[in-house]
Image (cartoon, rainbow, N blue to C red):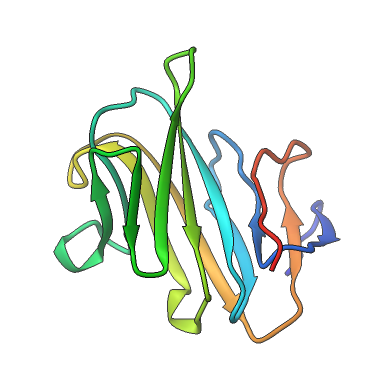
Length: 146
């Protein structure tokens, strides 16, 4: 996966990508089927309710919705860490990636239908080897090795 004026580098994690705080582009992460990885969502205005959903944040698309620091739903988990700056970090982890995990996701604070702060991204799951396309020079994501 590469485009003009972008750096392409091999990635040693199962799931990786660009984690710009604000971007006009949708952040895209690629991962190998069977692998696992974490995506860090940097959010402002942290609230009690944290959520993670696939496609539209409607009943069937809501994977995790919790007021707790950690949330778990099968292969999906979240962990919240507050920052002294008032910002929050919500780390989403997906284990045992499958092709059906490909798609758009949203993580955020507040209600899933009217979030106070959210972060959209896309995951693309491939059969094996993959490349990371870097849109910005400063990667802030954490990667888990398989």
